[in-house]
Image 1 (cartoon, rainbow, N blue to C red):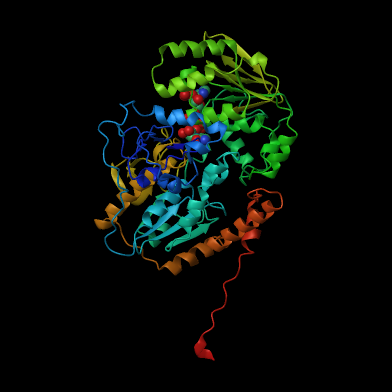
Image 2 (image 1 turned 90 degrees about the vertical axis):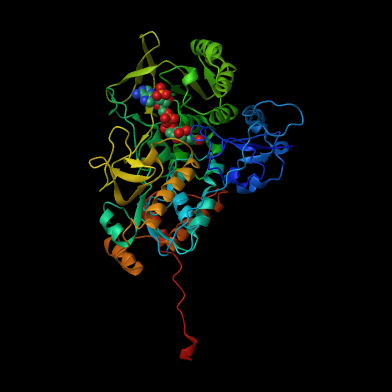
Amino acid sequence: MPHVITQSCCSDGSCVYACPVNCIHPSPDEPDFAAAEMLYIDPDACVDCGACVSACPVGAIRHDSRLTPEQLPFIAINADHYPPRPAGVKLPPNTKLAPVLPAPQVRGRGLTVAIVGSGPAGMYAADELLTQDGVRVNVFDKLPTPYGLVRAGVAPDHQSTKSITRLFDRISGARGFTYYLNVQVGQHLSHADLLAHHHAVIYAVGASGDRRLDIEGMGLPGAGTATETVAWINGHPGFTGRSVDLSHRRVVIVGNGNVALDVARILTCDPENLAGTDISDTALQTLRRSAVREVVVAARRDPADSAFTLPELIGLTETADVVLDAADHALVLADLQTVGDPGTRAKLEILAALPEAGESVGRRIRLAYRLSPQRILGSARVAGIEFSGGAGESVTIDAGLVLTSIGYRGAPVPDLPFDETAAVVPNDAGRVIDPATGRAVPGAYVAGWIKRGPNGFVGTNKSCAMQTVAALVDDFNAGRLDGPTGRPAALAKLVRDRQPDVVDAAGWRAIDAAEIARGQAQGRPRVKFTSTEEMLAAARQRPTRPRRFSLLRF
Ligand code: NAP
């Protein structure tokens, strides 16, 4: 009986390197890895050893006899990735040897790297660097809490995805790792300050903004973005004070990527199902009072072009009441006649089996197609949205809240060049490139969304960060990086002078422990602090270091 990869696959590829028989694909060295919606276990080749289960950082792999009813579709999804073959033939033709995890070989000692951003890309970069003896990594984050979008962007009902923080906790506990949290590079420290104390700086700052839809009415109360709503749901201190008005019956979300599905699911589910998660208390109370009955997820193109992934569509339809209008059902059937790609066909088959909108009575999500947003309606506040339909006709949907969900967007990084069109820092395999000269900017590197744009999953950042670290180590080995001029203690002093409220590892552990303790009473993984002041107050409760006594003094 084989193992099966399920919905929360993070695509970091740890399972691929752990598998002794190379039965998990696409592997990070294969061309289709970057575009894959998840990884798949070949049921014929799997020897059932369970190595992948131990390696998976998010608990996404299960024995096929232990799947929940919602996970059963993943048996076929894993198997369908592989070609059929004659009975008794274990491996597909042309199977290569299993890839070996490439490790950077640092020549010389004392490599010291600053990483700006403690989300997945930053943490995977730290992990990769710390595979080498004598390397030191200082991780800076503008918030007092680490882990970026894993804490503030992953939906609270996706706790298994959030469990990747256990891996990040292990990485931050490694020798050579130091946290400087609540420190904003660009405000408290400049790039030059960092370079004075490190050989190199890796910016793993993500995409902190979102793409804005430039249509009339976007400034009205009741118009917002899905990414901000996710941050509010997750208790991000920059968003927790927002007012999210759920006192009306319908919400429209523009765009149908995975973020749109996350928000639609949270806004329509029974809030009591979220009461056992780390959702922000403010969001939970607001959801308990919600009058919303329908969330319309409006895409401008056809069902076959849906931006959500198959695993997330399965997860959605297993847990929520999802419907389609008759006209959209017809579009799905038309697409099924022409589309050959198996992944897209699998999505279309699920859509085709969804009930008609008229049949559903509870809280529901309606997936809608061929709707191009034209303007937000309303005077004092949002009353609806006008789309242009498939034939150019005007389609109006009444709604009290309109959220655009058309993607995240990177923001310029102080002291670095910026590509306004792609909203990334221009780079070559992670080395920052100055477009004026075409040359690498010495000591400056990028990883994650600010390097490649806002796409992929949590684990996609592993191979992305590994590529950046390989470039950095190459430059260090070739003598292209100047050494730091300041001593490590001087960096700590500089940071404290500029930001007295810097939070170190012990401070974060105190915040973490306090949040977990608050959660225990309610049977929740944690109750988050949602303001910087509360976080800093908790950080100050960190245990003070025991005084060292010298035996010689007796
Ligand atoms: P996304 O997947 O890029 O989806 C963006 C959506 O916005 C698409 O439907 C796109 O439609 C639409 N759009 C873009 N411009 C538009 C316009 N001017 N008017 C109307 N619609 C427009 O973005 P996302 O949902 O923010 O996700 C970002 C990344 O995070 C993705 O890689 C996603 O898979 C990942 N993520 C994963 C998970 C998970 O695995 N659970 C959860 C959240 C996010 P077109 O296709 O027509 O351009």
